[in-house]
Length: 321
Image (cartoon, rainbow, N blue to C red; front, side, top):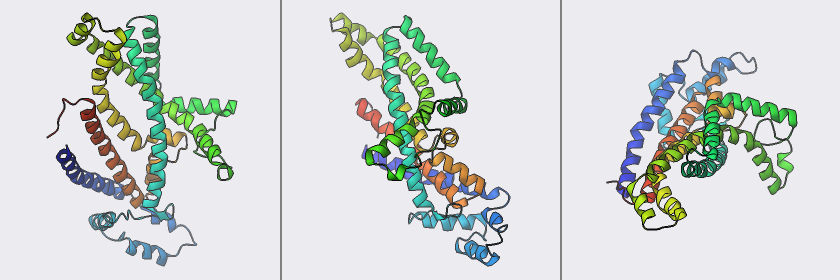
């Protein structure tokens, strides 16, 4: 397993290089750059702009710019964000933590609800509860995230029960530790429900299908024939095998959330990696865009590696060589 993990990490390197280079090329292909906006500011002199261009090699060709930037990345120097006036690495660390909080909240919300619902629906196939939850999952898959987010934000603005965006309230700095936790939790509700609802719907249907397939298998029939209690047959034998395919899905869901649920973050004004990517594109902040892309790509690949490791832990029959 150790050799497999090492090989996967070695494979990550060329993949990330290609990904970051294509992103670097794409943002440079757009007409103009961030300094074109600065040139319209009479308080910023042309000499200052030229100094920054020479310092960060932005007056050279794209390939040379990328090679200088890549050499700095090895030293964890992702460049400088001109739009935010802060090193990119410092900004990414802050936004990554915000995205991690949202991702953890969504994973707990969706998986802790979806898996029990899927098991319940499979055990009570075609009964009233199964039909109700299947109908609700169909609605959850049908509602677009952006529309659902706007609807919840409108309800929050009318009722005043929940905040209508952002991550902190105005008096956050003066709150106690417990008050800060509650304030962040209130701001988490809407983006968590928006992202998690579609996740619950999809995961519940998948878990239901996996459980139905396992419950029809011969070893489950044999376990029942031996006289084992039904709850042991379901939760000790069936669930363990039905959950194996879900582990791979968990890796994809984890990596996708960590790399930024961009649309929901933007609508709900959540300061994560997804909304940061949009700001980098809009301002043509090349180093911020490249650093954000590299970070999200790494998290995406890491998520699938974690899924592979968890799959071995859940099912000892699986081995990687």
